[in-house]
Length: 136
Image (cartoon, rainbow, N blue to C red; front, side, top):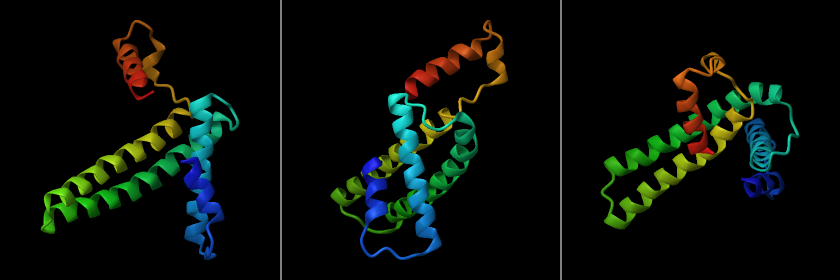
């Protein structure tokens, strides 16, 4: 992700479109979030991640859903050979993994707490803890 962010900032022949600038900013913020999450370096406060994390996640999920729809339509409509079907299915799995790899840390950096977690005797804490460790 960090390599994608660096490449998007220094790519030759960039146009000055607002959409490209927004994509570049999102890439850099996601890269900073992933580095902060992966290495535990608190560079940006959790309030920043509470505000920007869900917004960026919605944008990424929307783009990912659009791409998944296109790939799914490709699988359903086009007569593809078996290797092409495998490549398209692999692209779908890779895209889902890529989006989850970015969205989960962005949301976890905000350190959202559920009101159900207030009572330690509650079984929800154990289920959420196991789920948290699974995605970590």
